[in-house]
Image (cartoon, rainbow, N blue to C red; front, side, top):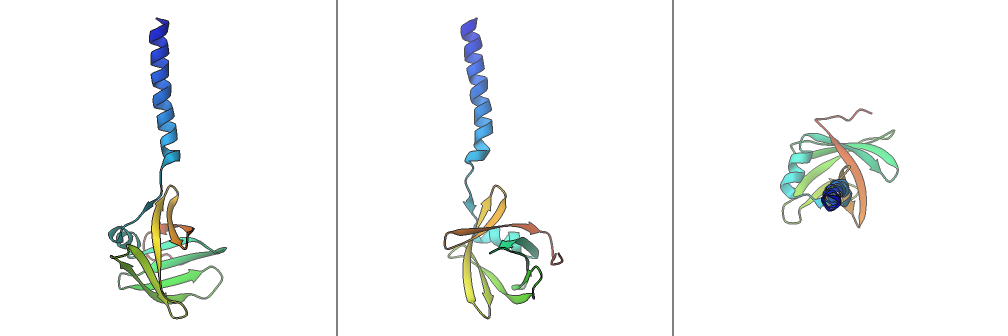
Length: 129
């Protein structure tokens, strides 16, 4: 009787611990070019970049509008590179710049030079703060 209880209790604890630790062990995953296109096309990203809150809209025609809080907006271009699986943006002062996009436990993140910039996506054009 004690042995059966011990085995049952051990099994239940094992299942419970597996259930509780699985989310903590989840890995960030790099998104593919197709996933990035579906995520961004016609939608708005919102996050914080180097301490500044921003929203960025990605029009279906390849135009992007970067709107930092309390500052002037910038209009540029965006595309997704199927060879590198990267999101790329173009602004006159910078030129084309590529970023990996990761799916994270908290949403998404732009990744450039080993630094991650978390963001989430709002449906449609949502540039107002």
